[in-house]
Structures are given as C-alpha cells and as structure tokens.
Image (cartoon, rainbow, N blue to C red; front, side):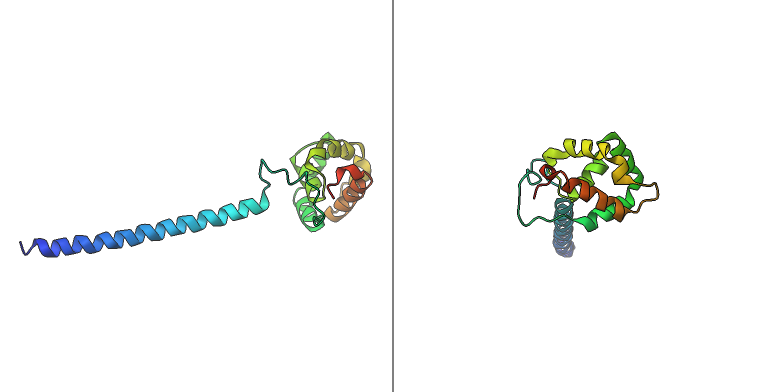
Length: 145
C-alpha cells in the first residue's frame, strides 16, 4: 500500500502539470487567433460590409498604399487596365477612393483612357497612381467622398 501513495502523488502532480500545459497552449492559440483575425480584419473588407459604398467625410485617398501596391504589381495592373477589369486595377481604385459599386464604370474608364493613364512602358508607380487619381477626379461619380 505504501507503494501506491507515492505513485498516486506523482499522478496527481502530473495531472496539474498537464492542465498547465493545456492552459498555456489554449492561451497561445487564442492569442494567435485574435492577432491573425485582427490583422486580416484590418487588411480585408468584410464580404457583407457596405463600407465601400458609404460616403464617410473622414475617409481619405491612400495614395501611399496605392503607390506601394502599384510598384509591386505594375505588369498585372497594365493587363487588368487593358481588359478594363480585374482584381489589381480594382484594388488600386478602391485605395484611391472609388466606390465599390462603381468599379465596373471605373474599369471601363481606365480601359478607355489606357494610353493617357499608363503612358510609357517604363512609367513609375507614382506617375501611374497620379494619372489614375486625375482620371478618377475627372469622373466625380466614381469617388465615395
């Protein structure tokens, strides 16, 4: 019987250690999930959200983000612009304040003004974004603010 008491004590202690490990793992999982959810929520619009169609006075054009995006995706932007549609040209449009509901009209405008907007093949991202912004400004109904 004396043999069982130390064994019972060891099992009891290990069960607490296992709970602590489980608690730690659970907390890590929750923290990681919350962090990744916060990141994706801040970088991706909610599918059910109408936020892109709501006129909000404090919204501003994010030209810096648009330039960074354009710099990383010039060839794909050019291809989308020639087609007048696509996720890359739409993304830049949204960054420049185009209403989500007006993206088809925006795509048509970009396609029709391709030579004016894209200029030369060695155009800088900043120049492209400036040309796009000017073209959007010439069509006020595209802007959400």
